[in-house]
Amino acid sequence: MYTIVEKIGNSKKRVSLSLDSQPGHCVKLAGSFNDWDPESSPMPEKAAGHYAVTLELAPGYYEYKFVIDGEWVLDDGNSNFASNDFGTLNSVLQLD
Image (cartoon, rainbow, N blue to C red; front, side, top):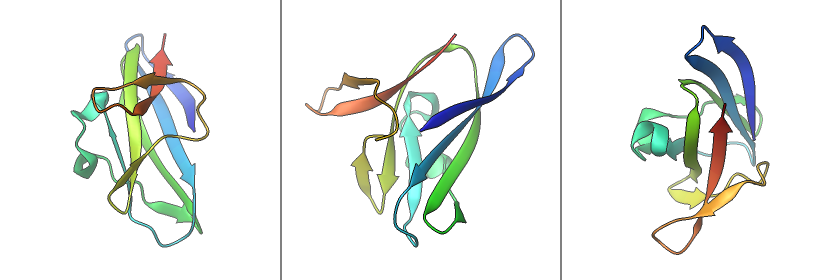
């Protein structure tokens, strides 16, 4: 699930992405905003089973997935998705 936390000037927005799952997992975020590198966006466990990260993004179209213990999964809290080159789906984040 994502939430726009605040607008930063005219060019960027602070966006929080979160995932509720079982506690004790290694959760990361990969997407077009970080060249699909899950190592660049770890999602710490903020509370038992609640993982979150905040990014600063310019307006645009972004695709992403959560990486939970090495498994790439859709954001169940986001009903927007698109097909990818691997025959699966990516979650979509559109910032205006």
